Length: 118
Image (cartoon, rainbow, N blue to C red):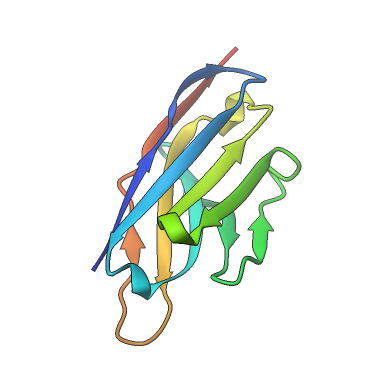
């Protein structure tokens, strides 16, 4: 079983930066691609960024040029660097992992709140 724990959320002003972290534990050898999703109450969860085990990244158009995803395999940690934050970035941010092979499970974090104020 893969356990994911997010940290780094908080209350910031528009234009500020935050770095979210997601620490993986448990069956970390099962961790393949990882991603960050966010959700606002009443709306569907949105994929923000993803990274494969080989380091290939995807960034959603809504955050492209402002957010960067990275991972430190040695530390089993996923990051989301968020710059130039906007009011519309306010959401709960979730970390997720996909299984690297059959027999491995998915990882789901509990989420961390990011609130951007004007």
